Image (tube, rainbow, N blue to C red; front, side, top):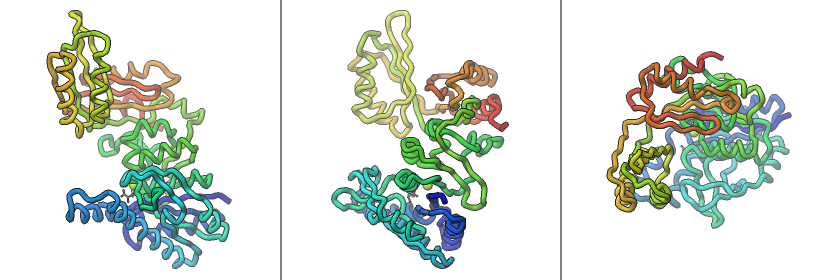
Amino acid sequence: MQLIVQKFGGTSVADTARIKMAAKRATNTFSNGNKVVVVVSARGKTTDELLALAYEIDKRPSTRELDMLLSTGEQISCALMAIAIHSLGFPAVSFSGRQIGITTDSSHTKARIVNMDANRITTELSRNKIVVIAGYQGVDENDNITTLGRGGSDTTAVAIAALLKADMCDIFTDVDGIYTSDPRIVPEARKLTQISYDEILELASLGAQVLNVRSIEVAKKYNVPLRVRPSFNDGPGTLICREVGEMEKIVVSGATVTKNEAKITLTGIPDRPGSAAKIFQELAEAKINVDVIIQNVSSNGLADVTFTVLKDDLTLALETAERIKNKICATSITADDKIAKLSIVGIGMRSHSGIAEDLFRTLADEEINIQMISTSEIKISCVIDEECADRALIAVHKAFKLDQA
Ligand code: ASP
Ligand code: MG
């Protein structure tokens, strides 16, 4: 007998027919002799619709009241799921986050779980019931309802799986797994059988669309085996787990491009200790997240510093850069928001050499200029012209044979 957590996303519980399908999956798993905990999202676009209602009334709704409102979406689907399981002739009981003691901090609309209580769940499981839980919600220490941020039901599911030491946490969704690249750009992209927590965290742009990033962090911390599976067929999906020996053999597991960053260059900075510290201190104080950074020093003792920020932060970052420029006596500022960041990720990079060279050669053969480079132990990223992004991704996917199993 195993303990399985099954999480169904919005599309998998969008209407009563889908809810019945999901219920059937839960009862099949239960009939096979397993203990089953189901975690559900709100139906279809419910969360968006509720948000739209609030903003129709007030442009700046209270976040406490937003949480009160948004948490109802999951409460509806969890009750309907329990009813659907009953209709199939099986015992089930549904709980809100509060009823199973999910306590969070007080950051409304983006709360973090601080505590959970397994008692009520394990009691019902030992009474042979399927336990259905509303995802995405908890209460703070003053008993105010909170929500965990968009896509937060994944985090609820993984946290419950960690708490109960579940044998598997299955995330049922509307795609059939995680791919080597974005299939909309690279038609040859291949579904991965498995991938490590670290790789999927680095490939956030691939994983995040399918899975909430925070949930992967929790899964990694507590070593929860996680599978992203299709809800519309019996496909095995993609297993996300701690790295195992054989994964090392695969040098590159995935390739992505992101187009959500812009770069800013400060030129003519006097090359002396403290300049970089001043620049990034000001940016940090303005709560701007900086990603890639490069510095060049020219022969006349002046340096240029280029860094990337999220496009959404560009206006604020430019205002901040203007202030910095005066403080550090830089000569000018330029910005470019037509850039893309191409990344390849793989834990095999730790033990193989020549990967960077292969990546740069591939881009050179495509006559694509590399503007910036950054690396981590398992990732290499190049900032390139946005116009070349898709072509670069296709070429790199092919060069690293990501289309071949
Ligand atoms: N219903 C919430 C959302 O749409 C949480 C979730 O689906 O995971 O973001
Ligand atoms: Mg989701």
